[in-house]
Length: 87
View (cartoon, rainbow, N blue to C red):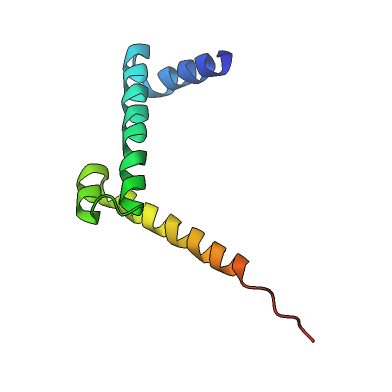
């Protein structure tokens, strides 16, 4: 908790906003993130359309989720292929 207090104090000083304003913004950002993650998860599982995910989470987040998913799939594929021996 002391680390959070120091971070809050520093943010208040640097932004010239009040402590309640900073806390309200932090709450909004956190809540949006908590809401966005299940939306993107549902999209990647095929439970909602791309268009619906874009409408709810935004194109940037959908594209990031797609990119990350593709990277994970490529890593899995690479890991499942045995390395060829170099002679």
